[in-house]
Length: 417
Image (cartoon, rainbow, N blue to C red; front, side):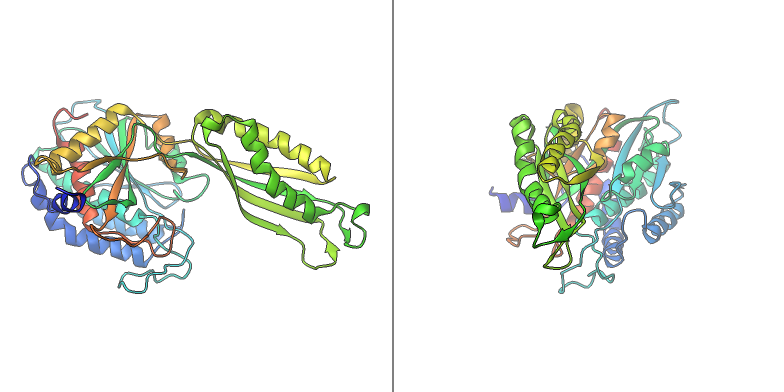
């Protein structure tokens, strides 16, 4: 069986060992969940502004007999599903979804669910993650009533994953990890075919911090740069030299990458400005590099600024450490995916590489073991390039039902956690 045939068979949802009635419940919910995803896609909201999204989730969960707790900031929520048969003091298994969108334009023109908000788009798949978590909550609420669910579950609908500091810290501050024994998440991956997930033990994402460098001088006339601080040259040289200097001072195995995203200086061709700025990100594959980067950057910037007689200040914003998947949790994801979709020999799990992207799911793993899986969303045979954080990003919506089955399998299968 080739890869296309394998992925296509995986999305037929005919694998062995579903919990009683589970597959029928997911199929019944699938049209609603797709419609919910499309509604979110039409109405994207940025981090800590997800009031409409939060309201839609709250109303649907309350209608299902659940009691969501909205976070103190007014967006995002926690939902506990605790069956009567759960042992006293049993730890929660948690499932996290991020609900925010990105500040970019939706470039799709051929779909009815294109964003209706200029400069806003669900271009990272968070609408899919949210729909998967909603479907999981609805299925497990029914499973708790029928006695199939025997362990407590916490659904985490997290705001503000795309900003720094991320909403994971809001969830943790609100007690979202109290009593949690293990936590899982999925993230859409347009390189993985629908019907599959990508897994990796250890670091699957990278640390990511943001920095803004301010350079200042007295300003002056471009005819007399020697009498002032040539700030444009100073900022240009710093932009060009600092990434290489940082790389040469750190272990190359740490995979440290400093990349600028914004440079600003001056307003006239014959005026040396008084202020210039550089803004960018520092990404690290290893925790050791993440810990050393701030102090080393301060040292290197001081030397470069002295060369050009520029005053400087550095705003260094800690973002996220790497997401480090725990081996047992990765094994549980693999077992659950295989049990649901791979019992006939279909290949449904593939190895995945570490990304330089940042993910604030990492903060949860400071409190409990867990893992993040890459959820396949590329239609079999689709050769279009739809990377994350691009306006053309879109998904094969069959991935939603697959994600629901994956999460519910982790919660329902006896002995998995």
